[in-house]
Length: 151
Image (cartoon, rainbow, N blue to C red; front, side):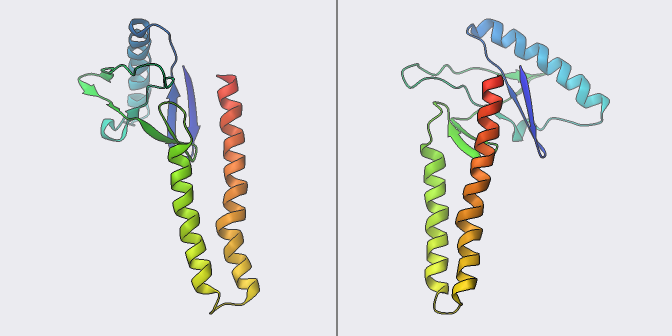
């Protein structure tokens, strides 16, 4: 089990080759987590909580019933993790689709603004959408890769 905290989001990464042992470990961790949350007057929102069962493209996904005290966590086939959208096979397709939409919107804004703004103002818009986003994404991706290597 590896907890990862980023801003106000917490992710817990579990791995196990045996589903029975996985469920036992999960129950043990949730018991500990529930006690810790109660001690600190916090609660887990099961309606905001989901899990992703990562598999290879060749492996069939197994429908797991993951829950605690009759509250079950919803299975999701994709998630946003540290700013990167990924699916259960760790494909970049979902993230690329979102990125294309955002960049297309940015291009539209710049194209329509060019008749109303000066070149320096357009450069500011460009850097806000493209350059800063690219640098931030590289930083987040570097952190993600480092944490996955430690996992």
